[in-house]
Image (cartoon, rainbow, N blue to C red; front, top):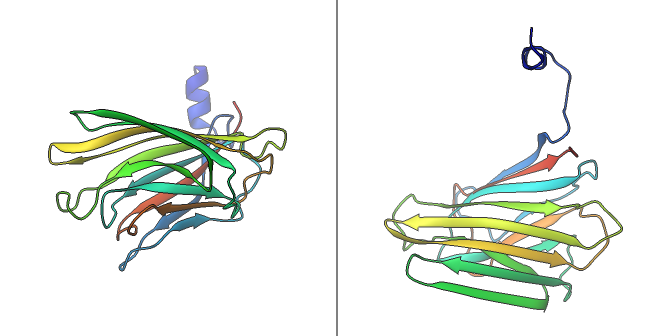
Length: 183
């Protein structure tokens, strides 16, 4: 039996580089003003959040860590919609800005999607960085956004709060938090 067959047929446990589900949040009827993951264990190397969202209006996320609303964040973004490209940045901000999604005015039952990577989230010797890719289609229109962010703190991340900059997350929006083991 080759090595792949042995690994595939065995129950060796968790391998380095594996994604392990930590928590999932699904938004119910009536929507939600924000989504928060708390009590995040410090046992992984990186975190990843995968999401599918719909807002009350076209909006972007505001992300904060450990309930820190001070001026400790910086962010960059580039976004395009098929006809134009824009770039923005912010520093000394109270949150990280990013993740593009559609709203009520978009085609019915369409959602934005994206992935957020939070690197070295438990490392107490460095600031925390984030990268995000998101987008949505609105029946031929829509947008794509690439973001990076910095939280100027050496504290381990134990909670993450994500909120729209306007409106609310609509029903059926979903967020899944994963831990990534070191490779």
